[in-house]
Length: 221
Image (cartoon, rainbow, N blue to C red; front, side, top):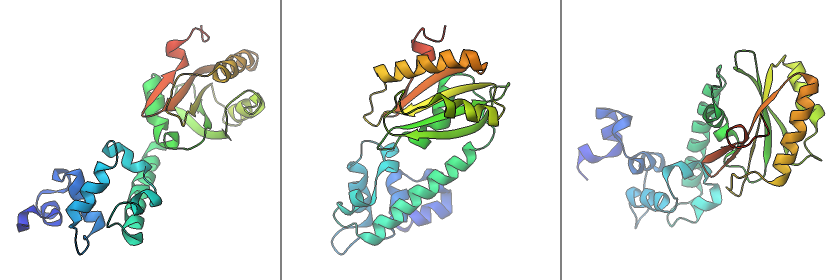
């Protein structure tokens, strides 16, 4: 390979933004094997996922199943992905103002989109619609028997929130609300009227997409 085509040299000469996904992954993997080049290993990993976005969902065992990827290389890739996630989430801890359901999705997608069970969060907002707290309240099947209104509104008072947005994921990828989702949301809305801290939306996240009950249903009217 010509010197100017090598990923590390290209990064040094032209900057990281010019590198392809395959070249970036090749730098992380560092080297190939006796029979396979690092470019071939990188290509095999990328060809086994639907898109680059799905790389964040890859786990250790998935990578070990790629011919030529051993324990050390699998650990290097997983560690790089996790570091990137943590940097992204640290940035998300800055003040975020919610204007619409897409803002909620952008603020929460990396918290729950790759989970294997349901995670139920509440976003607590101030009177400027800024997130003052993201609180994970429950893990498991989301329904009225598990998601207790006491916990939802307790943290609203503790944070002096002006409003609440509920967010949970569907590990199946189907973002349509279930009967339990709708029933739970209706119950929380009724209680919020008494508590004077409105539930202003309930967002369901799955398969790189989302569903807003505020945008699609009449229960918030």
